[in-house]
Image (cartoon, rainbow, N blue to C red; front, side, top):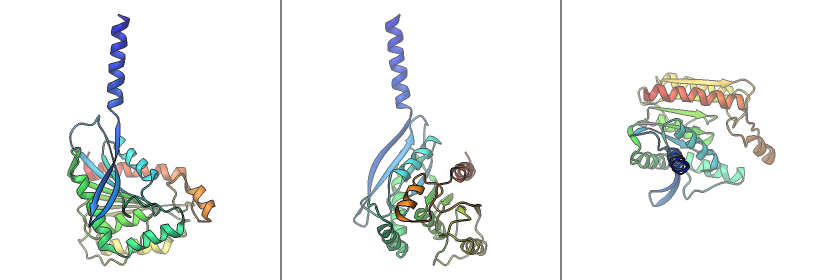
Length: 262
């Protein structure tokens, strides 16, 4: 009897270990450049499901963006943490991060091509319903997903966390297909109140379906627990805010359910 119980326990343990979030590194190509991403999904969820692209901060594709992909996988989605810089390039100093981000932001065809490469890869995953895609982004990545919406990408929705709001893209009414959700802090000196107001005016003129959430007393990079350390290290106006982080994620959870209808 003891032997049978032991065997059953081992079987149950094996099943439990198998039914969990699976994450793996992936490499994909865009115009001869190798992009190094990360795919996450829950193998306990059966069949194809909605998918979400996650775009990194200006530091590059790191553990933080992979963590967000894992969180989405636990919610029942397949997530791809993309690599917008290529070769998994990471910045260890704000000067380098600024150069990487500026180079891509000033070349929108390149940014779109690399974003589209992520969409293509994600759409080929056996766990993905390619007709049900969204994107979220942080800081630099938040600006990227907003720009992709401006360019008319076929996404159900995009969510930007402390992402840049200004753009040089001229948006004609009806161009934006995706629903938009933007989170910013009122004490964010990088995304000031006038920029938020200009963004709202832009979205109104474009007749976009959007919502802007601002948090009083909250600074830039409020979703990243490493923000305080990075702010002190490089003398940057960054600060983590647990309450805003939690609330913005909860609102995004509802947002994804609404746009996917599940």
